[in-house]
Image 1: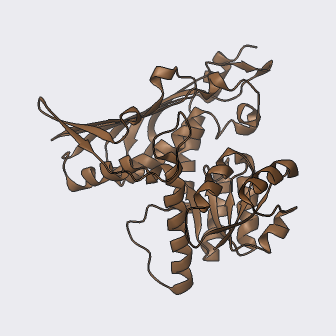
Image 2: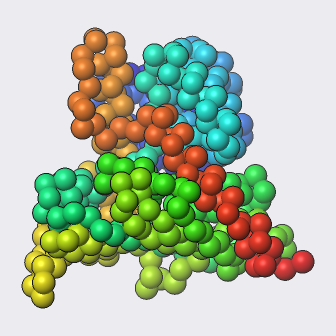
Length: 357
């Protein structure tokens, strides 16, 4: 499968590193609106630079959309109209209306259009999902997920991610929370009931380079899944070093589970007053960047391999595994609907109260 990369930022680098390790996948070239960025990335991986997406489509079977969020919808639509399979980074679009349009087009096309929910492929998520589905924890009563980073404190430049362009998708809730919304659905086989949710948004770093930051760097969500399970989500881009990482707590009527990425491959189960320690296997091929969840880089390998297999299955009429972790555009649309409703809550008041006039 010959793949082209649209966008030459950090996430494109992760996809290209993964492509080098997946048999049957060849990185055929890179396109970016900034030719110098595309040239730098292409030279690093020994692949061509394309001067336009039209030129790229002539040389590839499939595209990875790794461009800024507000460009995803147009590139996805263009790629599908050119008959190319798509792997689009999350979020699929910046509005539900765009997501609905692109999803309908993708479903009509018969192409394999996948979403970049790569955290589905963390070994911890796979192991914990198996524990939930096996009944080890009993009936699930409550879940709490946290995703804390420090990028609002460490990145001093003002970019599109801090502007109104990124308001709906690049704050801590839009950028990190969309993974957690999808993760809850994946873990408990039940979507978030967005009508039940209450949301708090906050800006702790209100200015960069003298410009007002227009997106949240902290968010709290409380609500229910459609199956009745209660949950809390916390996302942050303004956390201190000792707070960073991904965490998950699940309370069942038989056992409780606790996991934090700082514990790497270890999780903890509590039954009455007894603690058990469990581990999951990891065969790391690609080292993850400092500060990322352990195993993050390899999630792109696993995702790319499943996308390759899905494209092959479509070509050969072979049925895909019902338990495949590969997210489709329908999953992206479902998460987009939840995200838009959460952000619509008291977002304007929260931001107005945090950003100086």
